View 1 (tube, rainbow, N blue to C red):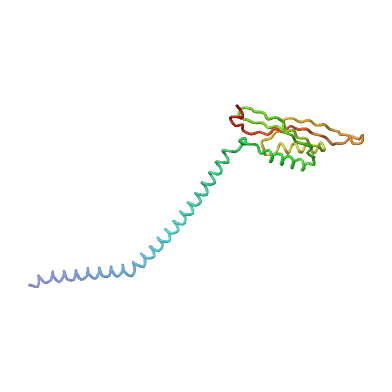
View 2 (tube, rainbow, N blue to C red; view 1 turned 180 degrees about the vertical axis):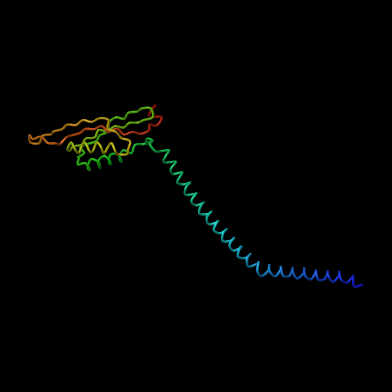
Amino acid sequence: MTRRGKLPLLLLDVLGASLLGAGLLAALWMTFFHNEHATTELRDFTQMVSSATQNLAALRSAGDEQRATLKERQVELATSGQLPAQIPIEEYFQTLSRLAGLHHLRVVRHNPLGPRNYPGLLEQRYAYEVMGRVADLARFLRAIEDAEFWADISYLKIDGGKRQGGEPTDECDALLTISLFSAARAEESG
């Protein structure tokens, strides 16, 4: 070969060796330096995925709690303000007796009266008699008005000024008709 032919080959060898060296340098850089950076990025990414998974689990749990609360509120809303299907008579009279005692009244009697049926409504009536001072009776009537149950005073008769030994007192005798309401069943209202 001539010298002219050897020069391009030598140039090609130098160029090949340079490219090989650059490739080795790049491989070394990727192996030692870039690998550290990639490992750090991978670790950060893994932590981010773990945090996102925990957040998602917390959101799902909170969503489940909110759905349960929503169902409870929907049931409360659906039944709120509705007449009871059955009158809790014993509970009402326990409440009335407790209110009478709180207002310093004595319960003389309570007797059932005949029920009344209206379309979709059942009224059960009771005669309820209390004794005490007029001011206490007024507070008792107000407490009945403020109580949260389906009851109403449909009749009231007050005999006041009872005499003890010829002297007038502020004692009175009050006869009330308490009406308790419930939603009438189809066979009751028909």
